[in-house]
Length: 173
Image (tube, rainbow, N blue to C red; front, side, top):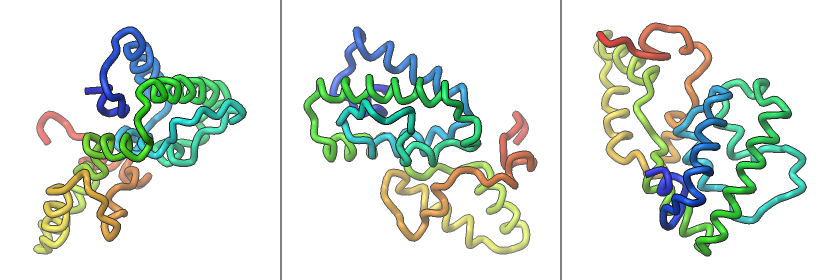
């Protein structure tokens, strides 16, 4: 499953276990929107950039909730991982566009985020079911680009961080 999420043609335990393990460790160090991260990772080309000076690709920056948490050490580790990832992609000899299509077929662009569900519930309780219907339509095609609904692919807004039902759900939710 992770090989597919990363756009690898075939899983190779000898190389991919380490690559996947390192990525999962890195993603736990800084608050990251995993849906956005994996979706935007498809935009990375397989060309290795050795002179990036620890700069993360702009596509991936969108996945981080607190960019100020991206220390120099983290940036260096992530760019090191990206170089290893690009080298692994080169082993597959798959064109970037073909890999992007494959990755986008397993990494959804849209997921029903807690804050969206809570907003829909709040509106429905007031008698307005328009957001419920729009979200239902949205998640029928979670892998498709839906430019008119781009706002639903964004990170959780800061106001929802600590609001009940928006940041996390309890067992009784």
